[in-house]
Image (cartoon, rainbow, N blue to C red; front, side, top):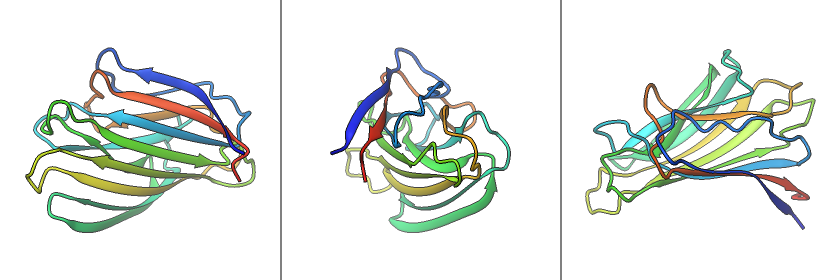
Length: 179
């Protein structure tokens, strides 16, 4: 049976440029992050965001994504050499004021020392109104091309100078015994 342990829970009391837990212990098999988020990207229904590990800002990330938004068209994107894992989606300020999006991220085998680090991400941008063009969904598969360092820091942020708004919340779990 899997054992889930809360490593960090943060609810923002004010806007913040990122969610950035550090000193993540290496005593778990896997990591899981769930968040309820919204950004302040002006005039948009959704905002794109980025993910990096251990402060690595080199071109050491790759990703593949499928996403849909605004016009019901499924779109694919990929990159083999990026400075972050991209195409993460968060609610923007043009969605209803009380609506936060959901964000889930699995990082299996985050301490394994002979393989690149994998990450699986799903995000939803609900809007709770009848306008078809005010929502988004995304699935992202990413790699951090580092086979020697355990993940001990996660940085999740909206694009550019955008910020997560007050009451966005993040819970990071360490999981043992899950397959």
